[in-house]
Image (cartoon, rainbow, N blue to C red; front, side, top):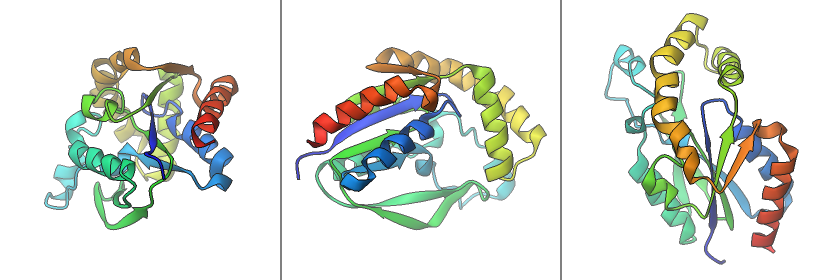
Length: 206
């Protein structure tokens, strides 16, 4: 198998990165040549910390991620080697004891808030996409997701947004837009941009 192509999909929290990745994956699912890697699974292990200490972690800062492990795994996949991808447990605020085996594919969809901001990750990617969604929409999506999927309270989500999510977005994520080959407004509802990405992926796997 030829060396994999990595498509990096970045953008703010709840901007629509996952929606775009899923639409692309569903389109090519029958080809068995596309896989999704989420940067969120590469949050650092915090099992050595007490729960209260884990909760204080700034999950919207680059230091929260095990970037070296992610880069190592991306290189392995590019070299046609399978990986044991970590799984992050957001209810326990630490890495799960389980892993997921990921086989190499021709196209890797890498999605995460710092995919463009982190130089080591950015340099691994062949195509860079930034999902550009208004902050009020991202906040509403984040509220719904964190309450329904991660069991968090409204107050804790709002506090985190004001203290870390918004300032980190302005400091790290928004400036990374300049590295994008393609900027996608409105996330997964931008069908023209998704069609463009589908056409590009077709040209790769064909």
